[in-house]
Length: 413
Image (cartoon, rainbow, N blue to C red; front, side):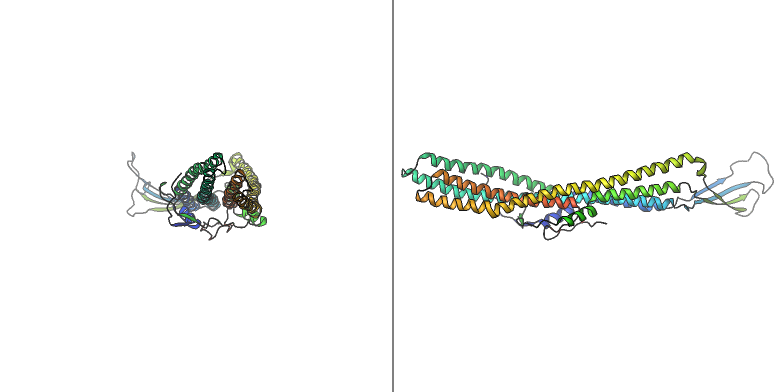
């Protein structure tokens, strides 16, 4: 059996959440991707770069009169986006940045949910170890009583062996519990970007049973804040901007040109200054731009269907997750209100009956085992309920205030 672990500094759920949000590499990577996508917005909104050209005479094979041909030409050209294509491209980039932001939120929600689930499982493992220790003390006492009665000839050696076997089973179960404890400590360290072998403090406040949020609140939060729904909505906006851009491709953007020339016989720096305008003619390429509009219309309709699918799937997942939460809550109430009190009463009665000779040894052992098993199952149900609530919060994509104090989160835009 593993040795009892020394007490260490208490660690709250809020401490774990803050450490994960501040240090987890997956979250940091998603933050950088979002930052990179935001940098695309001003790039897309910018005007085209101005063009500067310069021409100088290298050689002329004929003789010309002074001021007949230019020797140097300097020109400056700037396209003016009167069609607003750059603004449409900026809206596309903004929608893509919003997708990256929601992907960051999904990464954050998933990592925090995993950390909270690991925190609750760690607390459960420690609680199971404490139950194991108490039950081992109780069984050791039973074994001593049985041994004393055997030595006095009041009962057979089989009862002593039965009690010792029960003790051995508990000692072996302790080994498995230690392994579970190590696994959850390692998981928490990895999520907090710490060395896997670093010590973890004792989970504090992990035995609370938060209430189940009302269904209407969960529906509203899920449809409004779930990252997958918001990503689908952002993609609809992106496709709308793409369609707008396709329509604006029919509008030519003029390019204004200013040109300075110096003639071959001129004594001044500038002999002539000209200005001009040029633009493309998209109307002659009817099939190209009509096909682009048709493509963007289909993409918009597909994105709208994806949004509807994301909403339907979100509500379906919400129903499943809520059913899981309610089932675990029902288990807790059943254990605490009925099963555990009855099992403890039965054990106390069998213990008194055994001491008075009215209950046989096997009934006493069985009653003790029932209490031990139900206490373990009740604590397991508490952990399962807390984990299910953490997963429900990750699914909804919003802080449900199920765990106190509320943890800092990146806010929805």
